[in-house]
Image (cartoon, rainbow, N blue to C red; front, side):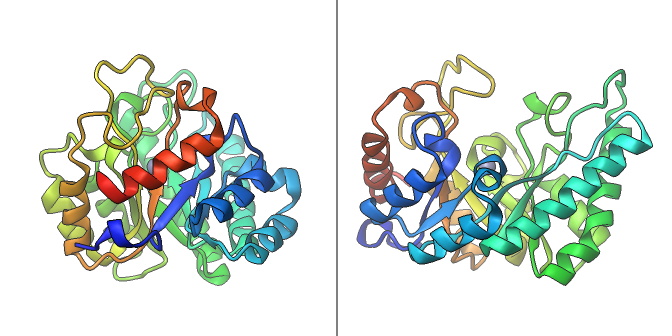
Length: 279
Ligand code: ZN
């Protein structure tokens, strides 16, 4: 396994982690100040600056864009809604290209309004990814399907296991690096098939996200823990991922009403310390 204690070179900040304190410009400066070489911005922040300007700022700061959050969310109750989602994803691909992102994170989307048909929603996701693949290929932007924890299946993302994400890759773009997966320890740590599915994903792993699972969890979305404060065996999962040959970024992504209240410099200092010691 890589020796994280000796180098920050693989560390990346997902800007959601400090989104309540810092806009993108401030997050870029914060990364530079704390020696964090990677950044993964969100669309609203990039759009606020314009993708060209955001890309210029990030490049001038010498940072690598490890991922762009986020595309997908393809599910909709009618054709017009699905078409609009696809069009929005085409724009997301263009923005990802403009900022030089290593991948665009793709979420499934939840149940369309009025529906209880999860299988149908999953088929919509498959069709949505298929629809944007040619544009992603032309733009050279890899798509990383990120399965979310099953507690989000109905409302946010109906792709819930790494097996499903791997199946989608097999079905839509086998042996093509334009389509891969994002492994987020928060979403997959519970999965009894995790080791096998990480091995199966192999070179398809485009992103590795870390945070921690707090017990008890007080909020489904906004109570993620700092690495080391919860119950996920992060080094074990990192070991599984690195055994596939993964040498890419380790992205810290924490949605937390607790950490959003803290001084952002304290948040980044803690991230650096935990990256060195417990990831
Ligand atoms: Zn994630």
